[in-house]
Image 1 (tube, rainbow, N blue to C red):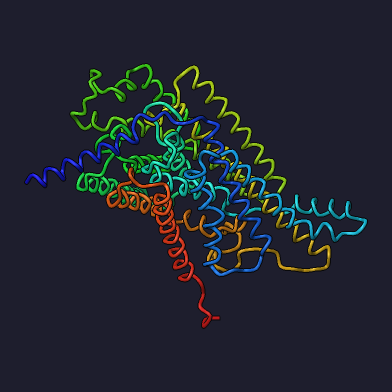
Image 2 (cartoon, rainbow, N blue to C red):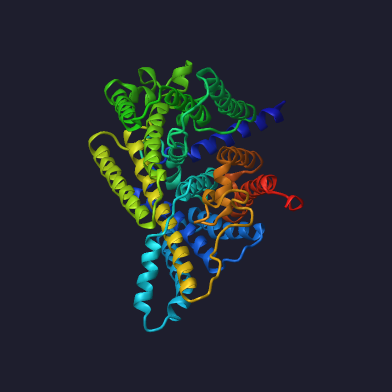
Length: 521
């Protein structure tokens, strides 16, 4: 009996240590968050240039290995071992792109004769007028996949001492890197939502509602499963994040119901509704005592005696996430509205300028809101948090679009060089291999040439669920607080390798199931 009680006390003590390890944190600066996230487009650019340097079709396992080396490993290192040298790490990745571009272009430029200037002018003109229309946006795929990959690494790494505390979630106000995780997840879902693609349902209302109930039930089931699992295992949790019973899966379920109502009612001006919801919620926080209730409970005692007070953070912040979702839907519509006609590279450059202008507006509004209204708070999901997520998300999306345009332009430029020199060489593409096989060329994320990003994008919810399961299992079998940096790096590498490998194998199975067999040729 005494041994049982002693083991229970040790377990409780260990749980409290882990909870204290992620409590009362203040975050980092806006600039450092921008630096970390700016690394993602640079890594994707390097991966794309590598594909152009070696355009031969490689086996799927080689593509997967390259994705790990070019994308996954640098992200993990920047968040852990090299987090104290972030500026130098970012500069190194940026400078490593220049030799690759030189190796790519110099053989073609150096082989031209005295009419080099006219030939280059012709090549650039042809490149700028090339048609880049497609049914999918590679920049949105990269945004969605890279933010999920970053989140998956962070949710386990934060439990080890080697992970910088400034990147962890903040307690009340602040801008930690992990504070962006849930916001970017909602924003990424909004960018690819049926409302953003302006897909109208053709089925009867009751059948549509039935379909939405089924899909929402999956999210509710995941939320209930997480709740039961944490209660049974005694897994540590940060109560002030969502509350005692609430979790992010329930928030996603509410947003799914909200999105279904949007489609049924045929709301077109999502930005107007976003402003109404965000303004009303901010007024409730600051003018009607909702903020005080969330932070301190009823009568400022911090009590959690009923369901509402026990889950006040999760219930209240859902309104902020719904406003953010509406803003993301409007942003997605703006990005896709031009797909009704053909777009050239020049058109996409103008699109990029428009996105950068919107980004500047978001940053300006955030600065004003931080000073005059209320600082950023993920716990409250207040107006400043929504603006910060939109500002950071639109900046990241702009950088991915710039990478997309750059790689597409390089591909077209190389094609023109080959034709002009009389070497009708087939340009690099992804016509074979796992990534996008079985689909029309226009539907593939071929500008980036990264199979892993496409696999994560297609199975986003499953990837997020497996990341949560892997994090939970690791914490149950390992004392993360006592683990050295070397052992923690190995554990984190095995964990993320398992996640990525599962996505790769799933994608391979899906591709093989749609590929026509050779016997049917």
